Length: 198
Image (cartoon, rainbow, N blue to C red; front, side):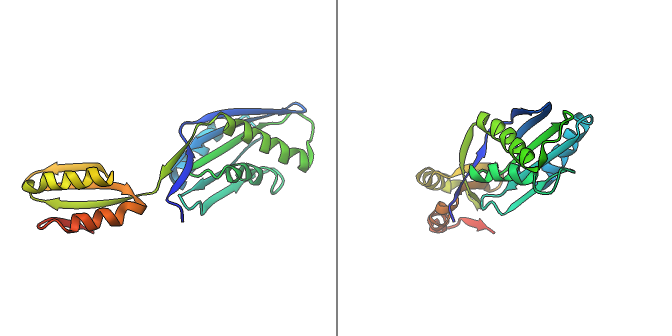
């Protein structure tokens, strides 16, 4: 498995119009299913006068957690095309919502699939995509006299300090790219008197 994934940096919007129907699309970076629920609830409130609020999301670096919702549109005509666009760009930690205002003319299932796909494409085309690494956390405890040695290893392995406290002992929470975590742990384990907390 790769230890990188692609996601969008900031929310974007798009639009698609067909035979009087308007499809407003919103691509939003997310990190959990609970966050998705909350955002969808807010969009349903904000666009209460729309006919449908359809969405799809993808979560996790391995892209295994996902869902597509047609919100009353014929099965497979809304959520699946939205998810298809997320998939084709290999994005994750993303939610795309498409709000439909009905224009009085039925589009048919084929027309709906195209409309939801195009609306999603428009929002994603506006998005800035960022490649992120899958990181692991390592917690360590050590005496202050070991600080220079610890800092040298942190610098050598490109680890990041997520949090630290210096009381009787120094405690640090380190974050490092998953593929380098073993090397960092091995180097830290060689420092006499340093503890790696599980």
